[in-house]
Image (cartoon, rainbow, N blue to C red; front, side, top):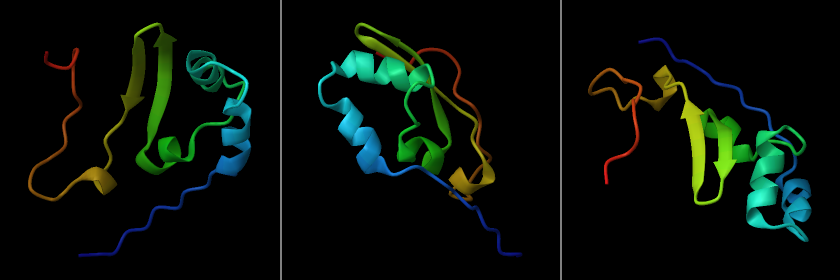
Length: 84
């Protein structure tokens, strides 16, 4: 099996954390979703986007990739809301 690589770049998380001070959590997340603040480094590491932020609800989207697989079975996108 051939080795594979994945290169990830991110911005300084300390700068993002500094922006969190003085704003509410929901305003902070809305600014990230709107592109007014940089993405959180974990978003780039795991490959997900912050799509929607509302009171009591945050929506993320991800495209599963080969790097997310444990090798036991193919990855399938999740559809619909999580179970209660």
